[in-house]
Amino acid sequence: MKSEIKCIAIMGLGLIGGSLALSLKSAEYKVIGITRNKETIDSALKTNAIDKGFTELSSEALLDVDVLFIATPLSQIISDIKKIGSFVNKEIIVSDVGSTKSDICIFAKKNLPQNVIFIGGHPMAGTEKSGFTFSTQNLFKDHAWVLTPLDESTKNRNAVALLKKIIISAGAIPVISSYERHDQAVALISHLPLLVSLGLCQMARKRDQNEIANLTAILASSGFRDMTRIGGGNPQLNFDLISSNISQLSLILPKFCNEVENILKLVKENPETLKKAFNEISKWQNDLYDKNGKNTLLNI
Image (cartoon, rainbow, N blue to C red):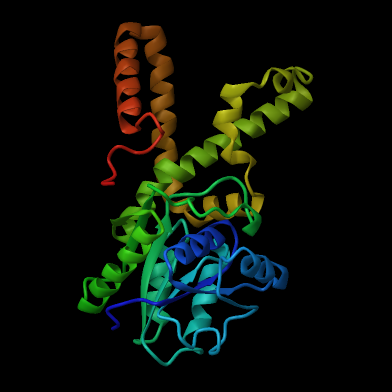
């Protein structure tokens, strides 16, 4: 395995792939862009996000590539992994940016040839926007980027070490986890909030239509806006996120509902205990983030 990475390919130049390209070009890596849309390639070349672009994965596109990031939509990643073995006969590190890891990592472990070293990945950054137009060089700055190696072999440890350097160059903070634990964690802090946001939008939308005219929509202000921001994101992405981790969501949703029901119960039966709990919750949430909204537990 190479000790130094010089050429990186990014398959998919949407918000995440485009932002990764911009950040790695700034860090002086050679960056190859692979995306079906010729206009996106032209935009990426014009903004100096990539050195060269291809409209499909091919041996030519991967000729000098040391690391390939798959940044296509979550529902497409496994089908893209299937193609890789056909185009490379040298050793190459492959990672992805999918927000759930178990299905992807298990598939890669079973199907990729030995010369392809796959390390699952998930940058904990993004917005409700999508597409190369919204890419930004600083998207990953001070955000966690999870790496989920398939095993503890020497070649995987070496690949993780090289990917950590790349991630740090992009401004992110590497976090290592098993893919199982990753999916459990993101179900709670990412996919459940999305589910709640979607549910709130659905309830307000139905009430707006059927029960109290359009008063809910008229009165919806900053609190509702902030709570439902992610529900207003890309519909296909939201579907992919919820459906890809449904097993974990099914496990934690009843626990969440129980917490909410317990709060309502304490309002009636033990308000002093509830006030104490609210104080503890407030302290915990405020301690978790600094004044700029960054997670204080990350080792920056």
